[in-house]
Length: 265
Image (tube, rainbow, N blue to C red; front, side, top):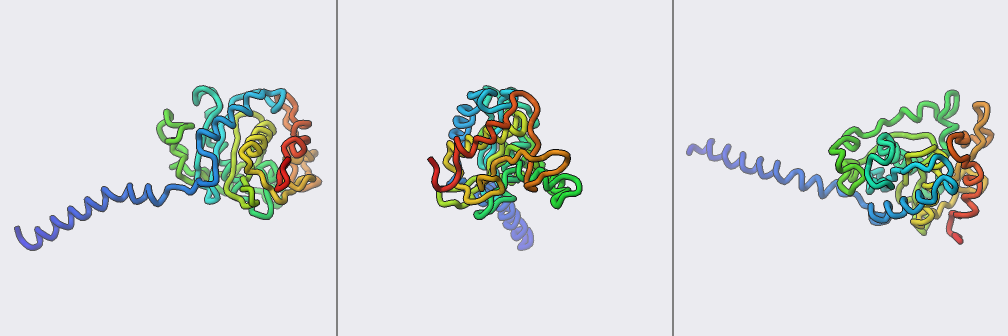
């Protein structure tokens, strides 16, 4: 064997070893920090307990739901569904739930919380955030994969930044007991108002709702139902949802029944 052949052979082995190790290295580097967030088991059990309350308590149509959690970097930590199988929910709501979680996290800070419902008004034509909804497409690499894994711990979304911007109800930022933002929660599968209500209850149950400030009259990120005649007096308004059981009264009372902030009852 010539010196050159020996060099190429040894180099080839090294390259093959590097290629073989690359997925493991990437996997280790890409593992998200989800230490302050619920795992899939807890998220699903909490989701199911709230969804079981039905339309009389949550408004809307009483549908099954998808729920997603992202960390502060916008990386999906868990994506689950409330039904028995993935086909029990609207298939399109899987990605929407992830994008709602990403939106709420991406547009909120330690000092000010914005739900996806709070950005509806600003994203309308002629308003200051118009075109927000088209500013970031969902990450295709996170969306597609083996459907049999959707809603499980091996869902293609898990460990990836989902992206996307959603400007209607169902997404909430998540805050630790210290008032530090740690990620976002997204719900999808029913009317946007019902998605917001269920997300609110889940966040409260998970004790990730220490919101210090927000645009609502109660100084949190609750939905503000003042969008009428293409205008929102508050600047953070959202339309009332007309489908199914009207949720307006439920939304109005959320801050009282499930208070946010450091002084939770």
